[in-house]
Length: 159
Image (cartoon, rainbow, N blue to C red; front, side):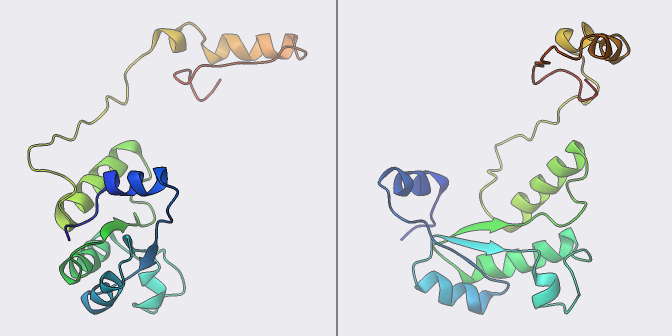
């Protein structure tokens, strides 16, 4: 059987079938779990406590996750690999995209070589956002506390 894909999982869900997931940190456990027919293998940042002996997941690095993901991937043939992004590896949109691209590129075949990762322009402007500056909007809200505020997704978070 080939490695499971997101499409396979969507089909299971559409049929009302259960989707199974277990955590693995190395090739030997991945092999056993894979042989049991589990759909998803999760490499969790909990490896910081379970494998590395830390009191929390905070010390786990992206390099740690990649190392363990590579082991789990080599030990399995069928399960889809899912990986946690460790603390602070997604602190900003740019960091999150860089971490995701690195994890996918170095640990599995989910990210195809012909695919491109597009980085958003973080300082892009939106006409809706520009038409509602916070310095004008805050006094309006103060003057009309009985009004309900509805904002669009691309309105500034400050509003």
